[in-house]
Image (cartoon, rainbow, N blue to C red):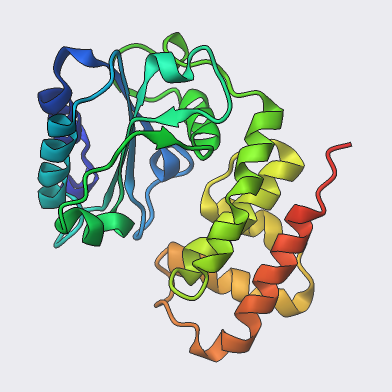
Length: 251
């Protein structure tokens, strides 16, 4: 395994800061849905017994700033949940802690992640349970309840307006995530981003296919990221995807 893809130091980091409260640490995301791509994060979920203290979250954030991203290192996304906040399952679930590189500027200014309600945990916990990839602790099904399909659908649709607002600054990721949302609504499966793009391309009108094909190629490292040549086509493609999502009828 390439050094940049290793997770043992991250498991050790979580256990060092959260101690015996750590019940399990689990891989999810790209690493368990077909393999890490050039732009993939190392996605980890930690399940803990008790609520965290402010000082624990601050110290963990400071160390993650040193080991996440940068030269020859992958970005890290770490989410912590308290077992009692997600089992028994309730919607929306509460997230105890989040580290993600898109929030680096906030962390560097001294912001410390706080617990909050997070509907996005519904698809994340679904991926963790399906991947069944413990890095520490028992299989995830021993700590987590399955997410009801209706809550999974509700959660992934709820995040669409926020996604669309990020389209100018995070074009590739927004397009691929919209593709994944449509695919999951229609099939119930959570695919890798490139597999979701494949699924969607086969269902797109011809004028939107180059946009999704570009997002997939960039994600896989086959092309450099550029959108200037497709600038007038990106937003119409996103609008088409949103209409398919908003018009979804499970009946």
